[in-house]
Length: 213
Image (tube, rainbow, N blue to C red; front, side, top):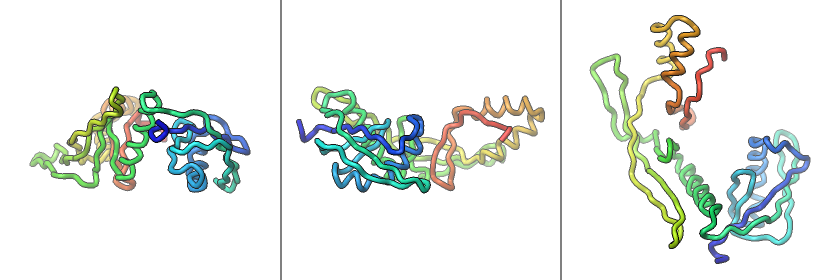
């Protein structure tokens, strides 16, 4: 129905920017978001498209200044997405992820946690064993069914080490003094580990450790 449908918009930028300039595109949309929402209501930006509940028959132009460059954003309607369409589930997932980000929850796999509110600490008398904390959060899954969207939301917990990453890397050098061996050892130990940074409350997955930087 029209009430449940979502509208997808294409947008172009003048002066033109490279298709792969994703960061710049995001900055431009962020700067022009308020002006766009005056015409189409609340929007979500994902995969170089803008999604909104309201359909416009005419193109709209808004302006945004990023890094001292003034850009013209031209928005044009491209597609109506209805309940049951594959892209409708993608939109609902985007909307859900946006809500969870507003709650400042950090995504680890398909689960979301708030490291700022650790429930308990696990300590050890052995100085060689790191202390641990328990994060509480949610496991979230969303899929489309014949009856409509189905959301599964479960309580989840994760045990996280309080070890300091830099100290761990320095400790590896005592075990493996050779530069090449240290590089191999550190990457083997840390690759695909989830790291939490306190200064900005974000989680990252380690792809590799580059000792040349």
